[in-house]
Each structure stands twice: as structure tokens, then as C-alpha cells.
View 1: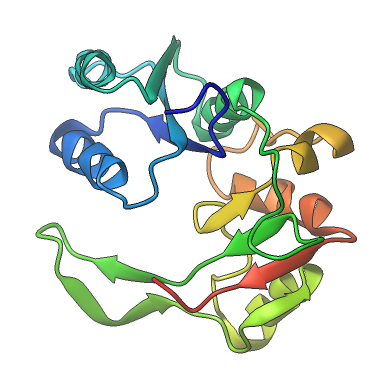
View 2 (view 1 turned 180 degrees about the vertical axis):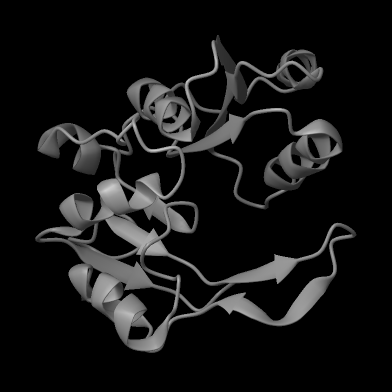
Length: 190
């Protein structure tokens, strides 16, 4: 890992039980490895905190933050506040965010047919179009945070944090502001 990784991956952790280790191992197994993984333990009481610490002891790319339970938005904000700033453009010049498709899987890791996150028109697009497309097609491609790669400066320059009063759907409280005036490289890759 370099002193300043190109990507900070933020993963919130709350009582994730048997899913935490496989999820982290999947992230660590990526072919691109110039990243840091920020595990934000949001007051877990099922042993997840200890798993986070053990994983960090095995891989220098992992940094762990423990905090009292404050909800998913608070955990995301902790990750954002501690992420390294990406120094290069994301995939395309002048583009500060990218998004990807996703498959839904069951508890055994098998793809669920007919349940996926897709984009109608890939390529570099006005980011705010992604929110409009959600209303037009019902696609969750645009209004999710977890399928995006953000230049952290988008949040810092615009003074944006997730709304910690929201216990779910907190993506909706910020993405319209993050997307304003931005372009997104929309990928069909899962």
C-alpha cells in the first residue's frame, strides 16, 4: 500500500456476524490493491468489533474506527472524515464520480434472478440524470451510495455530510447535493 492510497473504501459495521470476514476478504482480494479499507464499527455487540481488529492486524490497508452506535449515516460520516483524498480523476478527465451495476445475492452468495441494479444508458453522464432515471425506470443505480466511487473532495468542498437523523435512506439526503454540477462515469460492470 502506498502512503496515500488512490481509493478509500468505507464499510460500516454493525453486528454483521458471519458476513463481515467474507465481505472484507472479498474486498482485499481485488486485483486493484492501492486502497485503504476503513471499517467503521458502529457500536457492535456481537463480536464484530473484535473481528475488525483482527482483520486490521492481518492487513495494513485496513484501518478500524470504533464508536458508540449512532446509525449508518453517522458511521458513513466517520468514514468520510477519515478517508484519504483521491488525487487523480476517476476513470475519465473532469469526472469526479463513477458508478457500477450490481447483482443481488442470497445468503449463500447465489445471484437472485431478476434482482439487479442496472443503468439504462452507460457512459459519462450528467450525475443528476441518475436521480431522474430512478423515477422514470425504478432503477436504484442512481440513488445509492454503495455502488459509487466518489472523489472525497466532492463532500468536503460542498460541505456535505450524511443526515444522521435518518435511520435509513440517508443516501437521499446527500446525493442530490453531491451530484449537482457533476458528471458521472456510469459503468455496466457488476
